[in-house]
Image (cartoon, rainbow, N blue to C red; front, side, top):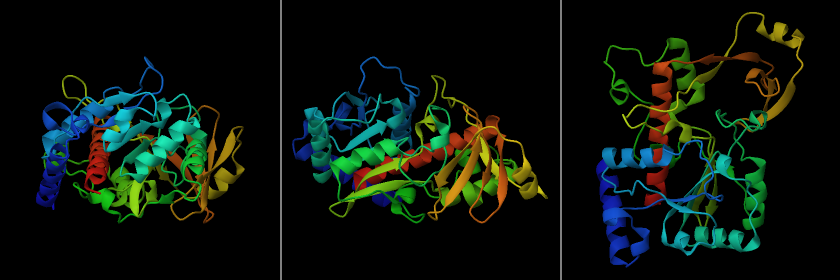
Length: 330
């Protein structure tokens, strides 16, 4: 599998060189990722995320990627059409409202083979302006839906199935001990947390993605924020620290939560099966508990620590690499 991908990437790179598309290439003939940053000198929450991920791709695959993204501030930038992948962190944009000429440019880009990755293109409503959390909703955020209803009024985002090739383009399965650089005898995660991760949070190393097809090809995907799991500091340590949110239940939880005093708001979030979870969350705070469509109530519990954070970073990085490699190979 990995040999086939190595050969395919080499063919892609060779074709790019021979076709004379020099602006598609970065340093020493490498593929360059375009990143949209609409406000010049704007602060980025995860400035080292994409360069760190691209560096890991160079280290762990035989692909060649320029670790310096090509920044553009408008979709009519001619350089966009000369590069295969556009990365957009939706949380870092002032808004997702674009004039007609930029919307038309994005449509042409996708119709002519470009791939768009909308990181934080899924964002549960209860998160509000909070940029430090993600939640596995299965529906694009309203701003993304509104934008693409203007660009492709005849199309809608559809959830990616758990067996989609994107989730196993290069890496398969959840991180193992070797990926985490720990001893084979060490526990990757506390048992309660690992069980939830394997069964519900990231089964088979998948996540909540939705996408749009153009001319039969997956041309755009949106996900909850993944860039928070890509960054490394100058010493190679993961940044920032990441905690886990899992659902837990116990005897009498249903009855107790039904009667609990609560002054916050309730929010509907689309599930993988198309039904709705009802999230209970105090304004500006982490969500407290959830009422599921089957009538079950569960609380959210948060786990943090080095082993939790390292595992999350390994997962998000492997997932991010799969997304970009899929984009090149399809």
